[in-house]
Length: 215
Image (cartoon, rainbow, N blue to C red):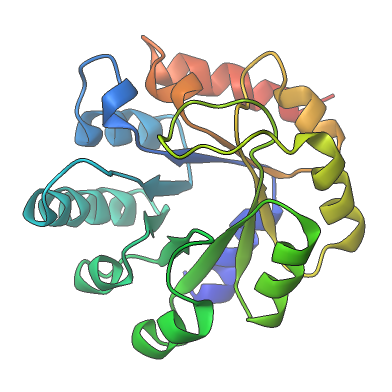
């Protein structure tokens, strides 16, 4: 896939999965990613805060092979250097991470850059800085990160839908019981973390979640 084809995945009905080994029922990130890919997931982000650089590198190198084999896009959270080393498809940046323009200088024009946004001015800034997509959230209360911020609710999502300039991923506290509300609000690409990683049967959970795109 070229970059344009990869970004198109963010604009179609897709589930965006993020690893979270701490909340994976004792399974490691590789095991979880394999199950996600078996279920047909096409966008996977590696997010790991608690491992040494060499461990992250080894895991990402393996996940890169798996995602290539399944034709899935592989995004690495926070670390543009790691994304380059393992030839990932993109990097995702938080509001406290490096600026998009600075990261673009080292990753080149073909790597996807995503940015987390929590309010309209941050989305507008991401557009201005030529990010390829934006994370929109957290929509609901979530505890997957230590530095979690209060939920922004569907109001911000509604604003992004009406003012969309770049693709976006709805994220934060999305579960099986509220995913349909997020989709009905206009989100096409929806991210779930622990709802998937903590599921005893990941493939079955993903299949159930996918049914919510049809209403």
